[in-house]
Amino acid sequence: MFQLGKTIISEDILEKEFVCNLSACKGACCVDGDAGAPLNEAETKILEEIYPKVKPFLRKEGIEAIEAQGTWVKGTDGDLETPLIDNKDCAYVIFDGKTALCGIEQAYNEGIVDWKKPVSCHLYPIRVKDFTEFAAVNYDKWDICDDACSLGKELEVPVYKFVKEALIRRFGEDWYLELEKVAEELKNS
Image (tube, rainbow, N blue to C red; front, side, top):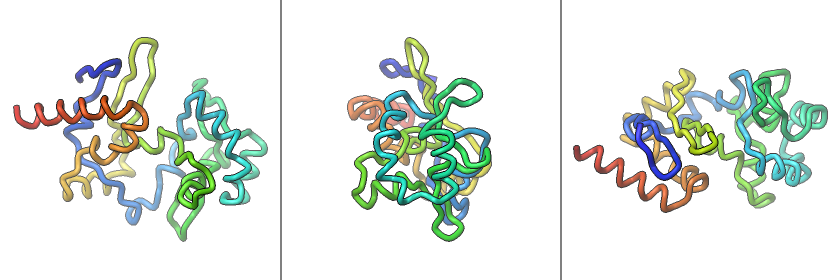
């Protein structure tokens, strides 16, 4: 672990390798698990605002879940998250054949909304836990991502480089440039 500004960072994000392999996992992270995607307070307001524009991209089951539960929910631990369909799929998930994709991201890609998706989804496999004085930035190892780890190793792409855009989105460009310096120092030591 090391500190960068008000973040405590696991060295795993510099040392582990990762590149999403949708053709192998079929977007399992959007349909497996026991909770929706983590959200922050600002994102709950964004979801409320963009839902009418995103709705046409969603499946009937997702629309029903959102209209019954809301555009976001409080999870069992009190954290804010996306609602689920039958405690399984994220309500915003859509399918391209057998591959799970994000309906919000689809609307974004088509220029309908200007918000890509929750930052927690964009950052994955990094998870950020906010505390009063700092944020913990950790690598989340999940067996459904074994193929992404293999592809990352094959392509020699560390986690922090794979999620560069999302890290900049969450912490800013200056923070990311400092992270790159730390990574380079670690590599050369």
